[in-house]
Length: 178
Image (cartoon, rainbow, N blue to C red; front, side, top):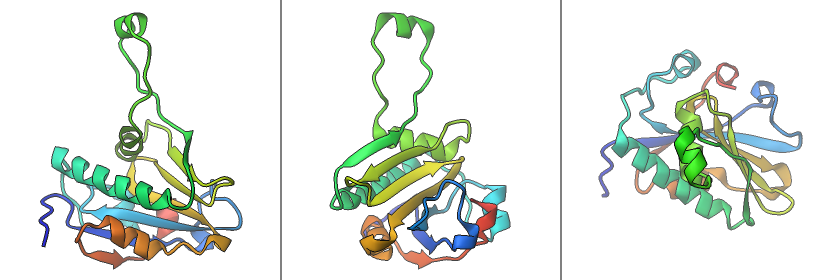
């Protein structure tokens, strides 16, 4: 079995319509996928999750691998399009001397999970969009919104991204995290 020193498991849950966030599109199903452990987070704790630890570079590298595996699977539904990205501040001298480059997609997705000062990062898959992957609000949650007619097996998608880690269906009090 492959050893993963930082992220020990993945959790997933369908989000009940009553707890859906305001940004959720009608006619879609919403799911949350998140690693364990996560940084201590009062919202997560109040929602009923209790697997916390300090994250480090190894944790973020593993999280990036999980995100990339999910993106790769979602791209089977259609081409990915960044709908809302993140721009990082650059020092004034760098702004004057070099043209700005967009940060790498994984860097944008991860930044919005660990700092709620960043806006959400949103990627759609397919034309018209069949699925939307979103990170944000400073929570280490991968939100996946899927058109109801698409019949995407979210549990299988999450299982693919685990790379041998356990996968648990975990219900939380989602109104405290959405």
